[in-house]
Length: 138
Image 1 (cartoon, rainbow, N blue to C red):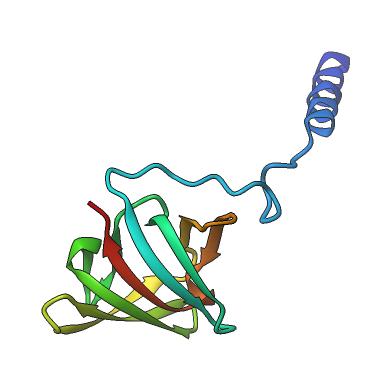
Image 2 (spheres, rainbow, N blue to C red; image 1 turned 90 degrees about the vertical axis):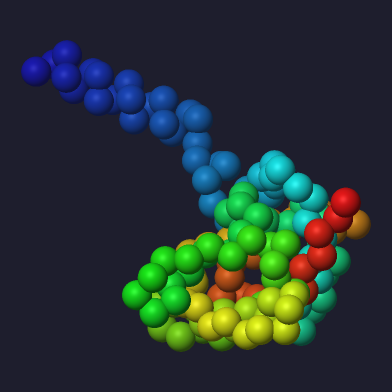
């Protein structure tokens, strides 16, 4: 019994010494690496605009969501812009494709977007975004 108690105390002490510094929203923003460099103009819900490179959604260069009962993913190369509107646990994304077609999908509000601006690495949750305009960099 004493051995278990000591093991538990040692584990607790290790966690306390290591801290949980890199786990919260205030930790350093690490930009996921992607297979292509996507540039985007992002406008947040406060109407603050950012020009970003190496843009991704959770490290992916496509937008995933529900189209009716189907799960879909739309490659950024097909997207001109996306407008977001929060609706409960999901976010409605109105996607304007490069050919002018509009598609509305529901995306998970837990998704985060990442990118590099001229002055900082950026991470922003999807519900905090108003609009994204996408450009693929060659």
